[in-house]
Length: 538
Image (cartoon, rainbow, N blue to C red; front, side):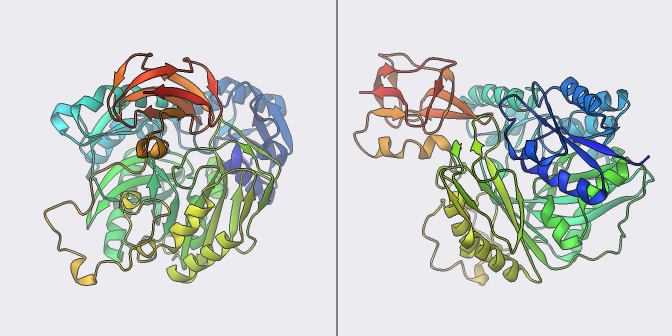
């Protein structure tokens, strides 16, 4: 059944991007907007706009679709995109759901159930279980979400309780489900994912891989395809594993199987039953519009993709965020000037004059460059970043320029610990290790300190830790989620004093040294602006 009018149950750049494909296919579009988001770019980009109470309300999206006369709903990514209950409600309302069937979402979206299904299909998985069984370090993860929300690295038993509570709160706020679990933590793997497409006629295809190892706070900042770490044999093995898992769960539509890779060993992490933020790099190397394929699959058509279709060249994507380029603290404010490049693909969610607020992801745009070789794609991306201009709000643009020029990135030698080994905007090494020391040979010692990637609590208080500063201020606007100390309390170095929440991410504020709490200037539930005084120490 052809789709004539489509509602996107989402916001930001992914909504704008879906609208673009709909226009090309001749499909009318409907945007939704929460009360605090009516002036956003996506709300101005559709044929119609319907206000809803919340992006996390399935009932509101369905009401909006009925009100506008839409016959289909596309969930984008995040929010309710992987909710089996939402998919069921959409289908139950007589609308077309552009995504996997609820049964596949339920199985694939439950990360523990997905791992059991993967193991049953012969796919290697990362061990999960109780902390006492796994040992340390371990990773606490949200069972029903992604994007770095609801994730905490735990290195010793004393950190476990707080990590479980914080991850659960963050997952509940972001996905409406606070369930978490623990899995073994691998210090410096690569993060490689396989793009899947499956139709209702039994065809399941792997469209190749994306390398997503450069991350901060478990969120990706640069993605590329193909991965510099894979050869044809390893690529085929990982693609076969992803397809086997997709068949095991009855998967339909576009989806991504995520893997950790260490040398030639790989382990299944999870299934993302939705379109990914980084899907454009696959589109550029394959020439396939993944959104268009999703729509065709939902309409009951067969895939317009051949198994023998060969990728062309190399593509690299970076995410331009409103955030501090060193600490990755989210920023809020008005984009007073915005000049985006014209010679690479740009998927923007913000326009000049728009506000970047506290309630949503602070992504401004994605810049995606393509070239016949990896070196040429990176060079084109570097040129694009050089001509990008943003004024009125702090962004990670300096960091992205530094990252794309970094010799380790250029050499393809990145892991998920890249930002531990190479702190943001630090001087790059004079040269990388000689090739003779790379490959199969390794010391029986860690190559780098086993620390978590740079986090807000470290960087936000560097000034206080360095000298006699006794006042801790808010590193960004947010809400005071928890106050953990009172005047007169004695605190030790790195003890949590309070927790801020912004963009549905929690930020611990910690003591930079041993001290006594002189005064606490905020209370739980209060809003603070960047720079507001929080706690005084003496």
